[in-house]
Image 1: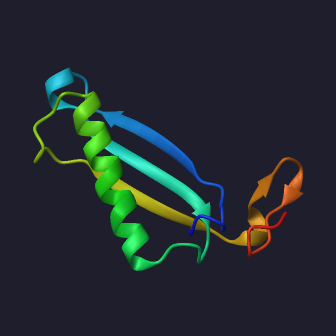
Image 2: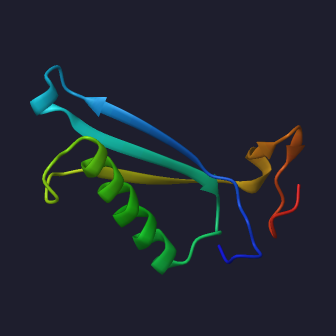
Length: 89
């Protein structure tokens, strides 16, 4: 996702567990398929992990689970249009 190539992404966060100290954060990132390089994928996972632990005031090593869901372009829409690869809709 270079600076001139923008893609839509949706982030959902679930906190599983009944007590604050037992919550297990699971972040789910949804984006069109084939838009991330392996390096970008690692950066998203690391960044989401750091933000959640910072906001929740959790230790840096506390487990945070990040799932990346790639949605086929034909199933991804924005502003009333179906997403097409290359960032066009």
